[in-house]
Length: 525
Image (cartoon, rainbow, N blue to C red; front, side, top):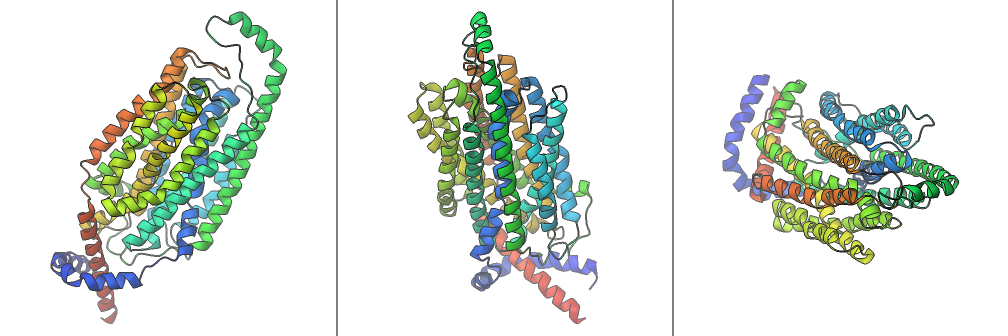
């Protein structure tokens, strides 16, 4: 049968689906229970593959800002350029890699796996060089800018195809959701691991602060104290730099290990109707298809605001604990408690969304952290209170990690139902979501570091000026709360509820059956 006949067949069959699915539902459910099942081993290996993105992302998110300011001793204005430019670079790399992945040929290892495996060693090398302090002073800005952007590009080559791999491990929605839950659990464990490795290794060699800068009038004592402690301060900074490199080496080794487990433990499956119904599209055509799909746009914009909120909190929390709360020796443990709490509550959110729906989970999970953010800013600094708030905050962090990746496959299914003759755009959908998430991180880190510069941030002092402490309070409480509220208002417009999900699931099953039957008929002609 000619290609035009194929498209006509699919369109006509789509008109009959609404009459057929109600009668055939028991048969389809029985069929689904015996096909496209993922083994526990496959789910675990798939989940382990997501750990490198979160381990490196958590280390960079929590520690890169304070590393650039206090260890590499770069000015806040230069640090803001590095942090923002690295993320803004993803405006090019994420959508471009997504398009290149979508048009790359299918190999015996799959379409996504070659990108994942080949990018891993180069990503590790560039990651380690981010945490190396060069001996020259004048070229530090260029050094960190080059290797940070290079790492972002190589991580994109790993994470975009890995994210799109969700659609190629099974066509069954419940199996994808289950695999996503495993993935989110391991990824949050990855954040715990990243926080523990980076925090504990670096914390064991934390250089002392300069206690001379207690206020704006302590110029004389500053000079005396600095001269008296100069030798110890210099040695301690060198130890801290070595600790950052050791942590980077450990994290890089874990990166390679996880990529290997993913490659050997997961089999990429070609969707029966992927790429068969339409010619390959250009990048601009794929972009228009993706950005014209209303549910996807609403989902991405909503999570853009909520991601920006959590990125602001993540990027500034170490500085907030160190200077505003005065918990310099405990901030790495507080961050670890947040990630542990998030890890333990991932199964709860998996149960919650199956019981009450994904939109309800978004509203409750995202807003849960708000009162605790207000509490830690308004009340007097207290270590026990900080740990209690960290446990509560981890619950929202878990929801922020899990829910976006659980809802993206629903948007893709909706797109396939509404565009049955246009398939194979999974990587483009995922790449643009990854881009917006990274872009939010870049904006948050760039703006916050620049804000600290204007507030008068001083490197390696024990006490910052009141303007700096006020800025940190704004960055970890009022600003994220406003962004969370804006994101939740946008989610009100998101149209895919539980009823729509089940309807799309049924229509896709019939679409696949129709195409399989058409291929059988064509082979007999």
